[in-house]
Length: 286
Ligand code: OGA
Ligand code: MN
Image (cartoon, rainbow, N blue to C red):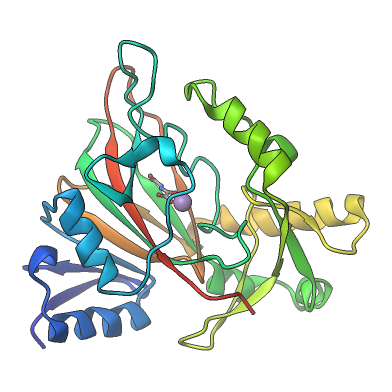
């Protein structure tokens, strides 16, 4: 074993003394093994350039191309900038409202994301944590009667906040209204199984989110919304959560196939948070 792994809890680990920019094939295999046993891996003390982040990410497989081209890093098309910084001319440096609601990345696409890699470039003094919810634990905690109601059903997932009564469009992000108006017209909903089987471990998890699941296919809407509300309550239970408080130069990879996550925000006025992000492409959920 050439990498050092410290368990933070049963499903989260940190990796220390590791240089993501110089990962050998053997080290990559060890990281992949660690990623089978853990849903979140936090690599400490990384300072990758955008190109190095892209190269590191690509060693794990093909990447998704960022859907918001406005905020792609000028040095790498693979890297999306998340930032609350607004330039003097009113334009945003990155996606301002990234992750502001519990979700699994790209579940609104027919082929959703496998994993997301997020690198901290600038941490705020206060706030800016990321919360993760283990949806395997959530599924296990559901009463049998609720499991029976969702079994075999498909959630309707859509990227546009304008079609989602649980979300509001951030007024901080200059292009957000246009983006979601266009998305509502051009990005059709997709169906995802409400219970998902992890393609590597075979473990089942609940695969819905307040951010992207707007209905249940074939279910009366009043009944579906009440059921979704009941399911979403479980995500808020801290027993199923891990809070990542970002240290400078952290790089975190998480498994979208069995987690929901959310940016907690709550920055002080004027304080800047900036992250660089790549997404590993996944397989169809089943
Ligand atoms: C993401 C995301 C959360 C955060 O990058 O997909 O949801 O805390 N980020 O920035
Ligand atoms: Mn996300």
